[in-house]
Amino acid sequence: MSHPETDTELPPHILIFPLPLQGHVNSMLNLAELLCLSGLHVTILLSNYAHNRLLRHASLRSLFSRHSGFRVATFSDGLPADHPRAGERLMDLAFSLKELGGSQFRRLMESTDGLSDGGARRGVSCLIIDGLLSFIISVVEEMGIPYIYFRTIGACSFWPHFCIQEIIDAGEVPLKGKNEDKLTYWKKKEMDMMVTSVPGMEKVLRRRDIPRSFGVANGDDPTFKTMKTDTKRTVEACGLILNTFEDLEAPILDQIRKHIPNLYSIGPIHALLKDRLESEGMESSHNYSSSLWEEDRSCIAWLDSQPTCSVIYVSFGSITTLTRDELLEFWYGLVNSGHKFLWVMRPDSISGNGNEIPVELEEGTKSRGWMVGWVPQQEVLAHPAIGAFFTHSGWNSTIESIAIGLPMLCWPYFADQMTNSRFVSEVWKVGLDMKDTCDRITVEKMVKEAMDVRRDEFSKRAHNMAMLARKAISEGGTSYLNLNRLIEFLKSTVS
Image 1 (cartoon, rainbow, N blue to C red):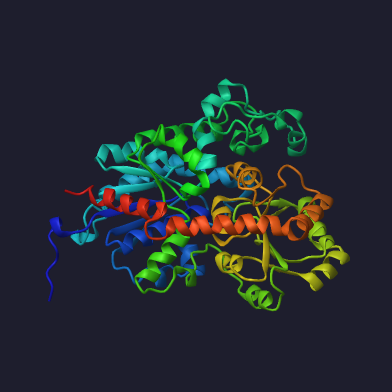
Image 2 (cartoon, rainbow, N blue to C red; image 1 turned 90 degrees about the horizontal axis):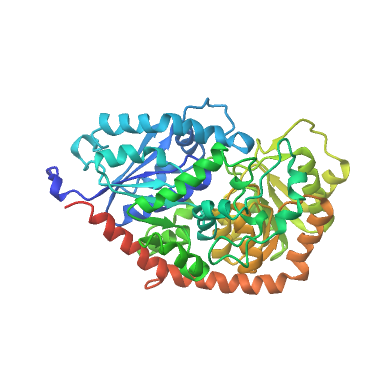
Protein backbone atom coordinates (compact mmCIF):
# COMPACT_ATOMS: atom_id res chain seq x y z
CA MET A 1 0.00 0.00 0.00
CA SER A 2 1.47 3.35 -1.02
CA HIS A 3 2.10 6.06 1.55
CA PRO A 4 0.84 9.61 1.11
CA GLU A 5 3.37 11.89 -0.50
CA THR A 6 5.06 14.47 1.65
CA ASP A 7 4.26 18.08 0.84
CA THR A 8 7.60 18.57 -0.91
CA GLU A 9 6.76 15.73 -3.30
CA LEU A 10 3.31 16.97 -4.20
CA PRO A 11 2.92 18.74 -7.57
CA PRO A 12 1.86 22.38 -7.80
CA HIS A 13 -1.83 23.00 -7.20
CA ILE A 14 -3.47 25.44 -9.62
CA LEU A 15 -6.85 27.02 -8.93
CA ILE A 16 -8.71 28.13 -12.07
CA PHE A 17 -11.57 30.58 -11.57
CA PRO A 18 -13.68 31.37 -14.69
CA LEU A 19 -16.56 33.78 -15.02
CA PRO A 20 -19.45 31.26 -14.90
CA LEU A 21 -20.60 31.71 -18.51
CA GLN A 22 -20.38 29.18 -21.34
CA GLY A 23 -17.54 30.72 -23.35
CA HIS A 24 -15.38 31.40 -20.31
CA VAL A 25 -15.97 27.95 -18.79
CA ASN A 26 -15.15 26.23 -22.12
CA SER A 27 -11.72 27.86 -22.37
CA MET A 28 -10.90 27.33 -18.71
CA LEU A 29 -11.86 23.63 -18.82
CA ASN A 30 -9.58 23.17 -21.83
CA LEU A 31 -6.73 24.81 -19.93
CA ALA A 32 -7.50 22.72 -16.84
CA GLU A 33 -7.12 19.52 -18.84
CA LEU A 34 -3.89 20.71 -20.45
CA LEU A 35 -2.44 21.34 -16.99
CA CYS A 36 -3.66 17.94 -15.75
CA LEU A 37 -1.86 16.32 -18.68
CA SER A 38 1.32 18.02 -17.45
CA GLY A 39 1.04 16.39 -14.03
CA LEU A 40 -0.28 19.38 -12.10
CA HIS A 41 -3.09 19.29 -9.61
CA VAL A 42 -5.97 21.47 -10.75
CA THR A 43 -9.12 22.75 -9.05
CA ILE A 44 -11.70 24.67 -11.07
CA LEU A 45 -14.02 26.96 -9.16
CA LEU A 46 -17.54 27.00 -10.66
CA SER A 47 -20.78 28.60 -9.61
CA ASN A 48 -23.38 26.13 -8.37
CA TYR A 49 -25.54 27.12 -11.35
CA ALA A 50 -22.83 26.39 -13.94
CA HIS A 51 -21.72 23.21 -12.17
CA ASN A 52 -25.26 21.81 -12.01
CA ARG A 53 -25.79 22.50 -15.70
CA LEU A 54 -22.49 20.85 -16.59
CA LEU A 55 -23.48 17.77 -14.59
CA ARG A 56 -26.89 17.69 -16.29
CA HIS A 57 -25.91 18.38 -19.89
CA ALA A 58 -22.17 17.76 -20.24
CA SER A 59 -19.58 15.04 -19.68
CA LEU A 60 -17.76 16.67 -16.77
CA ARG A 61 -17.45 13.51 -14.69
CA SER A 62 -16.40 11.35 -17.65
CA LEU A 63 -14.05 13.97 -19.03
CA PHE A 64 -12.00 14.37 -15.88
CA SER A 65 -12.30 10.87 -14.42
CA ARG A 66 -9.07 10.10 -16.32
CA HIS A 67 -7.24 12.89 -14.46
CA SER A 68 -6.79 12.02 -10.77
CA GLY A 69 -5.41 15.49 -10.07
CA PHE A 70 -8.62 17.32 -11.08
CA ARG A 71 -11.21 18.65 -8.65
CA VAL A 72 -14.24 20.95 -8.75
CA ALA A 73 -15.10 23.48 -6.05
CA THR A 74 -18.34 25.44 -6.09
CA PHE A 75 -19.80 28.71 -4.84
CA SER A 76 -23.07 30.62 -5.15
CA ASP A 77 -23.33 33.40 -7.74
CA GLY A 78 -26.08 34.98 -5.63
CA LEU A 79 -28.82 34.77 -8.29
CA PRO A 80 -31.93 32.55 -8.23
CA ALA A 81 -31.84 29.38 -10.32
CA ASP A 82 -34.39 30.74 -12.81
CA HIS A 83 -32.45 33.93 -13.56
CA PRO A 84 -31.63 33.97 -17.31
CA ARG A 85 -28.01 35.17 -16.96
CA ALA A 86 -28.22 36.39 -20.56
CA GLY A 87 -29.14 39.37 -22.70
CA GLU A 88 -29.82 42.65 -20.95
CA ARG A 89 -29.81 40.93 -17.55
CA LEU A 90 -26.30 39.56 -17.93
CA MET A 91 -24.79 42.34 -15.84
CA ASP A 92 -26.88 41.17 -12.88
CA LEU A 93 -24.46 38.27 -12.72
CA ALA A 94 -21.38 40.49 -12.84
CA PHE A 95 -22.61 42.76 -10.07
CA SER A 96 -23.81 39.87 -7.91
CA LEU A 97 -20.41 38.20 -8.20
CA LYS A 98 -18.64 41.45 -7.37
CA GLU A 99 -20.81 41.91 -4.28
CA LEU A 100 -20.53 38.34 -2.96
CA GLY A 101 -17.48 36.86 -4.62
CA GLY A 102 -14.66 38.25 -2.51
CA SER A 103 -16.11 37.16 0.82
CA GLN A 104 -17.16 33.76 -0.55
CA PHE A 105 -13.70 33.20 -1.99
CA ARG A 106 -12.08 34.06 1.35
CA ARG A 107 -14.33 31.65 3.24
CA LEU A 108 -13.66 28.88 0.73
CA MET A 109 -9.89 29.27 0.94
CA GLU A 110 -9.82 29.56 4.72
CA SER A 111 -12.32 26.77 5.47
CA THR A 112 -10.65 24.26 3.13
CA ASP A 113 -7.05 25.16 3.93
CA GLY A 114 -6.39 26.29 0.40
CA LEU A 115 -8.44 23.44 -1.12
CA SER A 116 -5.76 20.97 -0.01
CA ASP A 117 -8.17 18.01 0.00
CA GLY A 118 -7.19 16.93 3.52
CA GLY A 119 -3.48 17.10 2.76
CA ALA A 120 -3.65 15.00 -0.41
CA ARG A 121 -2.80 18.17 -2.33
CA ARG A 122 -0.90 21.30 -1.59
CA GLY A 123 -2.74 24.44 -0.74
CA VAL A 124 -3.24 26.53 -3.87
CA SER A 125 0.18 27.45 -5.23
CA CYS A 126 -1.03 29.68 -8.10
CA LEU A 127 -4.35 31.10 -9.25
CA ILE A 128 -5.44 31.48 -12.88
CA ILE A 129 -8.26 33.98 -12.74
CA ASP A 130 -10.70 35.22 -15.34
CA GLY A 131 -9.81 38.80 -16.15
CA LEU A 132 -13.28 40.02 -15.14
CA LEU A 133 -13.01 38.75 -11.55
CA SER A 134 -10.47 41.17 -10.09
CA PHE A 135 -12.60 41.62 -6.97
CA ILE A 136 -10.84 38.61 -5.37
CA ILE A 137 -7.33 39.96 -5.95
CA SER A 138 -7.10 41.64 -2.54
CA VAL A 139 -7.79 38.27 -0.90
CA VAL A 140 -5.25 36.50 -3.11
CA GLU A 141 -2.55 39.09 -2.41
CA GLU A 142 -3.26 38.95 1.31
CA MET A 143 -2.72 35.19 1.19
CA GLY A 144 0.49 35.62 -0.78
CA ILE A 145 -0.66 33.47 -3.72
CA PRO A 146 0.74 34.41 -7.17
CA TYR A 147 -1.87 34.84 -9.88
CA ILE A 148 -2.16 35.02 -13.65
CA TYR A 149 -5.02 36.54 -15.62
CA PHE A 150 -6.70 34.53 -18.36
CA ARG A 151 -8.73 36.80 -20.63
CA THR A 152 -11.02 34.67 -22.77
CA ILE A 153 -11.09 37.33 -25.49
CA GLY A 154 -8.72 37.98 -28.38
CA ALA A 155 -5.78 40.37 -28.31
CA CYS A 156 -7.66 42.61 -30.76
CA SER A 157 -10.36 43.34 -28.16
CA PHE A 158 -8.21 43.15 -25.03
CA TRP A 159 -6.04 45.99 -26.33
CA PRO A 160 -8.87 48.57 -26.79
CA HIS A 161 -10.12 47.60 -23.33
CA PHE A 162 -6.64 48.29 -22.00
CA CYS A 163 -6.61 51.67 -23.77
CA ILE A 164 -9.99 52.85 -22.46
CA GLN A 165 -8.54 55.93 -20.76
CA GLU A 166 -6.74 56.97 -23.94
CA ILE A 167 -9.98 56.57 -25.91
CA ILE A 168 -11.83 58.69 -23.34
CA ASP A 169 -9.13 61.37 -23.37
CA ALA A 170 -9.33 61.55 -27.16
CA GLY A 171 -13.12 62.03 -27.00
CA GLU A 172 -13.64 58.92 -29.13
CA VAL A 173 -16.12 57.03 -26.96
CA PRO A 174 -19.47 57.03 -28.83
CA LEU A 175 -21.74 57.92 -25.91
CA LYS A 176 -25.31 56.72 -26.13
CA GLY A 177 -28.02 59.33 -25.61
CA LYS A 178 -30.34 58.93 -22.65
CA ASN A 179 -33.33 56.76 -23.69
CA GLU A 180 -31.82 56.44 -27.18
CA ASP A 181 -32.81 53.14 -28.79
CA LYS A 182 -30.13 51.03 -30.40
CA LEU A 183 -31.30 51.64 -33.98
CA THR A 184 -30.87 55.39 -33.52
CA TYR A 185 -27.51 54.80 -31.85
CA TRP A 186 -26.33 52.57 -34.69
CA LYS A 187 -27.19 55.23 -37.28
CA LYS A 188 -25.14 58.03 -35.72
CA LYS A 189 -22.65 59.35 -38.30
CA GLU A 190 -19.94 59.63 -35.64
CA MET A 191 -19.99 55.82 -35.30
CA ASP A 192 -18.07 55.55 -38.59
CA MET A 193 -15.27 57.89 -37.50
CA MET A 194 -11.89 56.20 -37.05
CA VAL A 195 -10.47 55.63 -33.57
CA THR A 196 -6.95 57.09 -33.45
CA SER A 197 -6.11 56.54 -29.79
CA VAL A 198 -5.39 52.78 -29.79
CA PRO A 199 -1.77 52.27 -30.90
CA GLY A 200 -1.43 49.88 -33.82
CA MET A 201 -5.14 49.96 -34.65
CA GLU A 202 -5.48 53.50 -36.04
CA LYS A 203 -6.39 52.32 -39.54
CA VAL A 204 -8.73 49.54 -38.45
CA LEU A 205 -11.13 50.58 -35.71
CA ARG A 206 -14.14 52.79 -36.20
CA ARG A 207 -16.06 53.97 -33.18
CA ARG A 208 -18.70 51.33 -33.84
CA ASP A 209 -15.98 48.64 -33.66
CA ILE A 210 -14.66 49.33 -30.17
CA PRO A 211 -16.04 46.95 -27.51
CA ARG A 212 -19.70 47.70 -26.95
CA SER A 213 -19.23 48.02 -23.17
CA PHE A 214 -18.09 51.51 -24.24
CA GLY A 215 -21.57 52.28 -25.62
CA VAL A 216 -22.80 54.03 -22.49
CA ALA A 217 -24.51 57.29 -21.65
CA ASN A 218 -21.61 58.55 -19.51
CA GLY A 219 -18.25 57.54 -18.12
CA ASP A 220 -19.75 56.79 -14.69
CA ASP A 221 -21.66 53.78 -16.01
CA PRO A 222 -20.80 50.88 -13.63
CA THR A 223 -20.20 48.39 -16.45
CA PHE A 224 -17.87 50.81 -18.18
CA LYS A 225 -15.94 51.51 -14.98
CA THR A 226 -15.62 47.79 -14.18
CA MET A 227 -14.18 47.01 -17.63
CA LYS A 228 -11.76 49.91 -17.34
CA THR A 229 -10.52 48.99 -13.86
CA ASP A 230 -10.30 45.23 -14.38
CA THR A 231 -8.32 45.43 -17.61
CA LYS A 232 -5.76 47.91 -16.27
CA ARG A 233 -5.15 45.66 -13.26
CA THR A 234 -3.71 43.01 -15.57
CA VAL A 235 -0.28 44.65 -15.23
CA GLU A 236 -0.26 43.67 -11.52
CA ALA A 237 -0.48 39.95 -12.29
CA CYS A 238 2.40 37.54 -12.88
CA GLY A 239 1.29 37.20 -16.49
CA LEU A 240 -1.54 37.13 -19.01
CA ILE A 241 -2.92 34.13 -20.91
CA LEU A 242 -4.73 34.71 -24.20
CA ASN A 243 -6.45 32.12 -26.38
CA THR A 244 -4.85 33.31 -29.61
CA PHE A 245 -1.71 32.69 -31.66
CA GLU A 246 1.14 34.84 -32.88
CA ASP A 247 0.51 34.62 -36.62
CA LEU A 248 -3.09 35.74 -36.09
CA GLU A 249 -2.51 38.79 -33.89
CA ALA A 250 1.24 39.47 -33.73
CA PRO A 251 1.11 43.29 -34.12
CA ILE A 252 -1.43 43.64 -31.31
CA LEU A 253 0.37 41.13 -29.08
CA ASP A 254 3.54 43.19 -29.52
CA GLN A 255 1.66 46.28 -28.30
CA ILE A 256 0.35 44.42 -25.24
CA ARG A 257 3.82 43.08 -24.38
CA LYS A 258 5.07 46.66 -23.94
CA HIS A 259 2.91 46.73 -20.80
CA ILE A 260 2.62 43.02 -19.93
CA PRO A 261 5.86 41.30 -20.99
CA ASN A 262 4.89 37.90 -19.55
CA LEU A 263 2.22 37.11 -22.13
CA TYR A 264 1.23 33.53 -22.96
CA SER A 265 -0.54 33.17 -26.33
CA ILE A 266 -1.60 29.51 -26.31
CA GLY A 267 -4.43 29.30 -28.84
CA PRO A 268 -6.38 27.86 -30.40
CA ILE A 269 -6.55 26.19 -26.99
CA HIS A 270 -9.15 23.59 -27.99
CA ALA A 271 -6.94 22.44 -30.89
CA LEU A 272 -3.81 22.46 -28.73
CA LEU A 273 -5.59 20.23 -26.21
CA LYS A 274 -6.70 17.84 -28.96
CA ASP A 275 -3.11 17.52 -30.16
CA ARG A 276 -1.72 16.90 -26.68
CA LEU A 277 -4.34 14.25 -25.96
CA GLU A 278 -3.56 12.48 -29.22
CA SER A 279 0.16 12.55 -28.43
CA GLU A 280 -0.67 10.86 -25.10
CA GLY A 281 -2.79 8.24 -26.87
CA MET A 282 -5.94 9.54 -25.18
CA GLU A 283 -9.41 10.11 -26.61
CA SER A 284 -10.00 13.67 -27.75
CA SER A 285 -12.06 15.96 -25.56
CA HIS A 286 -14.10 16.72 -28.70
CA ASN A 287 -15.93 13.50 -27.85
CA TYR A 288 -16.94 14.98 -24.51
CA SER A 289 -19.28 17.87 -23.93
CA SER A 290 -18.61 20.91 -21.75
CA SER A 291 -21.94 22.50 -22.58
CA LEU A 292 -24.25 24.26 -20.14
CA TRP A 293 -27.06 23.44 -22.59
CA GLU A 294 -28.47 20.13 -23.75
CA GLU A 295 -27.01 19.34 -27.16
CA ASP A 296 -29.37 18.13 -29.87
CA ARG A 297 -27.41 15.70 -32.01
CA SER A 298 -30.21 15.32 -34.56
CA CYS A 299 -28.44 18.06 -36.51
CA ILE A 300 -25.50 15.75 -37.29
CA ALA A 301 -27.71 13.23 -39.06
CA TRP A 302 -29.34 16.09 -40.98
CA LEU A 303 -25.93 17.48 -41.98
CA ASP A 304 -24.86 14.01 -43.12
CA SER A 305 -27.61 14.15 -45.74
CA GLN A 306 -26.52 17.54 -47.16
CA PRO A 307 -24.03 18.22 -49.99
CA THR A 308 -20.53 19.50 -49.21
CA CYS A 309 -20.33 23.20 -48.22
CA SER A 310 -24.06 23.69 -48.85
CA VAL A 311 -25.18 24.72 -45.34
CA ILE A 312 -24.70 27.96 -43.46
CA TYR A 313 -24.46 27.34 -39.71
CA VAL A 314 -26.19 30.03 -37.63
CA SER A 315 -25.50 30.50 -33.93
CA PHE A 316 -25.48 33.68 -31.87
CA GLY A 317 -23.99 32.03 -28.80
CA SER A 318 -25.07 31.46 -25.23
CA ILE A 319 -25.86 35.04 -24.18
CA THR A 320 -27.41 36.87 -27.16
CA THR A 321 -31.13 37.55 -27.03
CA LEU A 322 -33.10 38.64 -30.11
CA THR A 323 -36.26 40.68 -30.27
CA ARG A 324 -39.09 39.11 -32.22
CA ASP A 325 -38.54 41.66 -35.00
CA GLU A 326 -34.84 40.75 -35.23
CA LEU A 327 -35.73 37.06 -35.26
CA LEU A 328 -38.09 37.53 -38.20
CA GLU A 329 -35.60 39.64 -40.18
CA PHE A 330 -32.89 36.98 -39.80
CA TRP A 331 -35.37 34.24 -40.62
CA TYR A 332 -36.70 35.89 -43.76
CA GLY A 333 -33.16 36.67 -44.90
CA LEU A 334 -32.04 33.06 -44.47
CA VAL A 335 -35.09 31.59 -46.19
CA ASN A 336 -34.95 34.11 -49.04
CA SER A 337 -31.25 33.41 -49.64
CA GLY A 338 -32.21 30.00 -50.99
CA HIS A 339 -29.43 28.31 -49.01
CA LYS A 340 -29.70 25.45 -46.54
CA PHE A 341 -29.24 26.56 -42.93
CA LEU A 342 -28.71 24.99 -39.51
CA TRP A 343 -29.87 27.48 -36.88
CA VAL A 344 -29.21 27.22 -33.14
CA MET A 345 -31.98 28.91 -31.18
CA ARG A 346 -31.73 28.58 -27.41
CA PRO A 347 -35.05 28.29 -25.54
CA ASP A 348 -34.32 31.65 -23.86
CA SER A 349 -32.93 33.47 -26.89
CA ILE A 350 -36.07 35.40 -27.90
CA SER A 351 -37.34 38.32 -25.84
CA GLY A 352 -40.89 39.65 -26.03
CA ASN A 353 -44.21 38.07 -26.88
CA GLY A 354 -45.71 36.50 -29.97
CA ASN A 355 -45.22 32.94 -31.18
CA GLU A 356 -47.00 32.94 -34.53
CA ILE A 357 -44.66 32.13 -37.40
CA PRO A 358 -45.56 33.28 -40.94
CA VAL A 359 -46.47 30.37 -43.21
CA GLU A 360 -43.75 31.21 -45.74
CA LEU A 361 -41.08 30.88 -43.05
CA GLU A 362 -42.44 27.55 -41.88
CA GLU A 363 -42.49 26.23 -45.42
CA GLY A 364 -39.04 27.62 -46.23
CA THR A 365 -37.58 26.05 -43.12
CA LYS A 366 -39.14 22.67 -43.81
CA SER A 367 -37.49 22.54 -47.22
CA ARG A 368 -34.11 24.10 -46.42
CA GLY A 369 -33.57 24.53 -42.69
CA TRP A 370 -32.97 22.69 -39.44
CA MET A 371 -33.51 24.48 -36.12
CA VAL A 372 -32.31 23.16 -32.76
CA GLY A 373 -31.80 24.45 -29.23
CA TRP A 374 -28.04 23.76 -28.99
CA VAL A 375 -25.40 21.75 -30.86
CA PRO A 376 -21.94 20.22 -30.38
CA GLN A 377 -20.37 23.22 -32.09
CA GLN A 378 -16.86 22.00 -32.83
CA GLU A 379 -18.29 18.88 -34.45
CA VAL A 380 -20.70 21.00 -36.51
CA LEU A 381 -18.00 23.42 -37.65
CA ALA A 382 -15.84 20.52 -38.82
CA HIS A 383 -18.68 18.87 -40.76
CA PRO A 384 -18.06 18.85 -44.53
CA ALA A 385 -21.62 20.08 -45.22
CA ILE A 386 -20.93 23.44 -43.53
CA GLY A 387 -19.91 26.21 -45.94
CA ALA A 388 -19.87 29.25 -43.62
CA PHE A 389 -20.59 30.29 -40.04
CA PHE A 390 -23.15 33.04 -39.30
CA THR A 391 -21.92 34.04 -35.85
CA HIS A 392 -22.24 36.56 -33.02
CA SER A 393 -18.43 36.80 -33.13
CA GLY A 394 -17.79 35.62 -29.59
CA TRP A 395 -14.09 34.84 -29.29
CA ASN A 396 -14.48 31.08 -28.81
CA SER A 397 -16.66 30.85 -31.91
CA THR A 398 -14.29 33.10 -33.87
CA ILE A 399 -11.13 31.16 -33.10
CA GLU A 400 -12.87 27.79 -33.54
CA SER A 401 -13.94 28.92 -37.00
CA ILE A 402 -10.42 30.16 -37.78
CA ALA A 403 -8.89 26.89 -36.62
CA ILE A 404 -11.15 24.86 -38.92
CA GLY A 405 -10.76 27.25 -41.87
CA LEU A 406 -14.38 28.35 -42.16
CA PRO A 407 -15.53 31.73 -43.55
CA MET A 408 -17.72 33.85 -41.25
CA LEU A 409 -20.67 36.19 -41.52
CA CYS A 410 -20.69 38.30 -38.36
CA TRP A 411 -23.53 39.91 -36.42
CA PRO A 412 -21.95 40.92 -33.10
CA TYR A 413 -24.19 41.48 -30.10
CA PHE A 414 -22.04 43.25 -27.50
CA ALA A 415 -18.66 43.52 -25.72
CA ASP A 416 -15.58 42.19 -27.56
CA GLN A 417 -17.71 40.84 -30.41
CA MET A 418 -17.79 44.28 -32.06
CA THR A 419 -14.00 44.28 -32.48
CA ASN A 420 -13.72 40.61 -33.42
CA SER A 421 -16.13 41.05 -36.33
CA ARG A 422 -14.15 44.02 -37.64
CA PHE A 423 -10.94 41.99 -37.65
CA VAL A 424 -12.71 39.09 -39.41
CA SER A 425 -13.72 41.36 -42.27
CA GLU A 426 -10.98 44.00 -42.49
CA VAL A 427 -7.77 42.45 -41.09
CA TRP A 428 -7.97 38.70 -41.61
CA LYS A 429 -10.45 39.10 -44.50
CA VAL A 430 -12.11 35.73 -43.90
CA GLY A 431 -15.69 36.97 -43.84
CA LEU A 432 -18.21 39.80 -43.64
CA ASP A 433 -19.22 42.16 -40.85
CA MET A 434 -22.95 42.87 -40.58
CA LYS A 435 -22.88 44.78 -37.30
CA ASP A 436 -25.38 47.47 -36.41
CA THR A 437 -27.93 46.44 -38.98
CA CYS A 438 -30.65 43.84 -39.01
CA ASP A 439 -32.91 43.63 -42.03
CA ARG A 440 -33.87 40.73 -44.26
CA ILE A 441 -32.47 42.27 -47.45
CA THR A 442 -29.00 42.69 -45.90
CA VAL A 443 -29.09 39.19 -44.41
CA GLU A 444 -30.08 37.65 -47.75
CA LYS A 445 -27.41 39.62 -49.63
CA MET A 446 -24.61 38.75 -47.22
CA VAL A 447 -25.52 35.06 -47.02
CA LYS A 448 -25.34 34.89 -50.81
CA GLU A 449 -22.05 36.79 -50.77
CA ALA A 450 -20.48 34.43 -48.22
CA MET A 451 -21.86 31.23 -49.74
CA ASP A 452 -21.66 32.13 -53.46
CA VAL A 453 -20.16 35.38 -54.71
CA ARG A 454 -17.01 35.53 -52.55
CA ARG A 455 -16.96 31.94 -51.38
CA ASP A 456 -13.69 30.92 -53.05
CA GLU A 457 -11.93 34.10 -51.90
CA PHE A 458 -12.97 33.68 -48.26
CA SER A 459 -12.38 29.93 -48.25
CA LYS A 460 -8.84 30.29 -49.55
CA ARG A 461 -7.89 32.85 -46.90
CA ALA A 462 -9.64 30.86 -44.16
CA HIS A 463 -7.75 27.72 -45.19
CA ASN A 464 -4.44 29.58 -45.04
CA MET A 465 -5.31 30.90 -41.58
CA ALA A 466 -6.16 27.40 -40.42
CA MET A 467 -2.74 26.22 -41.59
CA LEU A 468 -1.11 28.94 -39.46
CA ALA A 469 -3.18 27.83 -36.47
CA ARG A 470 -2.03 24.25 -37.04
CA LYS A 471 1.59 25.43 -37.19
CA ALA A 472 1.21 27.34 -33.89
CA ILE A 473 0.01 24.31 -31.90
CA SER A 474 2.39 21.78 -33.47
CA GLU A 475 5.64 20.81 -31.76
CA GLY A 476 7.96 23.81 -31.85
CA GLY A 477 5.12 26.21 -32.73
CA THR A 478 4.54 29.42 -30.80
CA SER A 479 1.48 28.27 -28.86
CA TYR A 480 3.09 24.89 -28.14
CA LEU A 481 6.18 26.60 -26.70
CA ASN A 482 4.18 29.22 -24.81
CA LEU A 483 2.15 26.51 -23.08
CA ASN A 484 5.39 24.79 -22.04
CA ARG A 485 6.66 28.11 -20.72
CA LEU A 486 3.42 28.62 -18.76
CA ILE A 487 3.71 25.16 -17.22
CA GLU A 488 7.31 25.82 -16.19
CA PHE A 489 6.22 29.04 -14.50
CA LEU A 490 3.43 27.23 -12.64
CA LYS A 491 5.89 24.58 -11.46
CA SER A 492 8.21 27.33 -10.21
CA THR A 493 5.54 28.62 -7.84
CA VAL A 494 6.48 25.88 -5.35
CA SER A 495 9.93 25.60 -3.85
